[in-house]
Structure formats: structure tokens, C-alpha cells
Image (cartoon, rainbow, N blue to C red; front, top):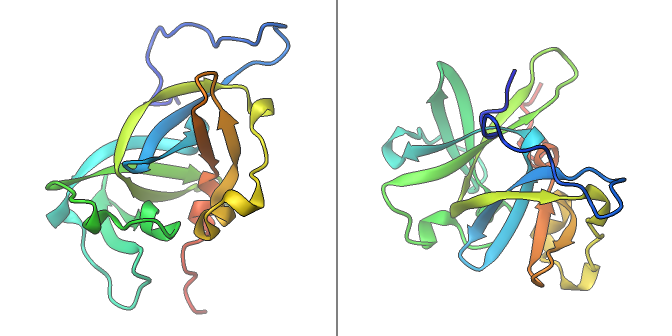
Length: 179
């Protein structure tokens, strides 16, 4: 199965100067206008725009769960990612009539993978990053709500510090049904 975020005929992945470490693709996006983050392309299924009125709210859920959306005939839970990580919720950011949504995909113990839609402020670009260059975050400088979902930070050559998130950790944060 091809990744819908990859461009057909795209050049081979760039390597570091010593040619020993292959870089991986990450989707660069904004949680809020001044907070930029990355998610590994391998953990993503699709990026889409969802009209606000097509998300059905569900009662008695945490405030960061927006509701559910009919995605390809399946129920897709929709989460405000900025609100989940204790940043400004999307409804306070002046969102237009649609939500920019990233569909995360995580391998489950059974054959079916788990999917979750996360609303972000906006999508920016695809970045090539050597995973070996992702650094552990300094605990004193990280927002408390971001820590459970943070894989680390990547410092780009232009002094741009990007938070690298873990899609599987975001999916794992979803409330579990009472059994």
C-alpha cells in the first residue's frame, strides 16, 4: 500500500554527509500559530479538511475530544490535538468553517490498525529528518501537557526547534471503554 502523503516519483531520501544514516519523512504542522511540530509520515494515513458541521459531538467525553466523523464509511474519533497537549483549543484560535485534520494510524495487537483524527492549526510541509538527531527534551522547558506525546526535539539547520510527536502515544491517550 502506498502512502498517500508521498509524492509519486519523489527523489530518493537524502542521506547525511557520511551516507550512513538515512533520513525519514515527517509531516510539519502547527498546533497553534507559534507552535510547530512533526509527526512521522509512517504513522499517518491521510490529511483532510472536515467541515465543522460534520463532526458529531459525543456526550460525557473529555473536552479535547471533538466527536466522531464518518470517514470512508467508518467512525473516526476526532481530537483537538492542541487542546489535548494543553495548548490553545482550536475553537479559541479563530478556525474557519473546516478543520485541518491528520488521520493517525497505529498498529494494534490484532490485524486491524487503530485510527484517530487530530485537528491541527495548519499543515506546513514534509521534512526530511535523521531520527538519530532527535534530541531528548529538556524537562524544564517543555509544556507539561506535551510531555506524554513528545518523542523529542529536532533542531533544523536554520535554528528552528521542532517538537517531534509520537502518533501512537496520542492514540493511546483516548479513553478506554468501561468493560
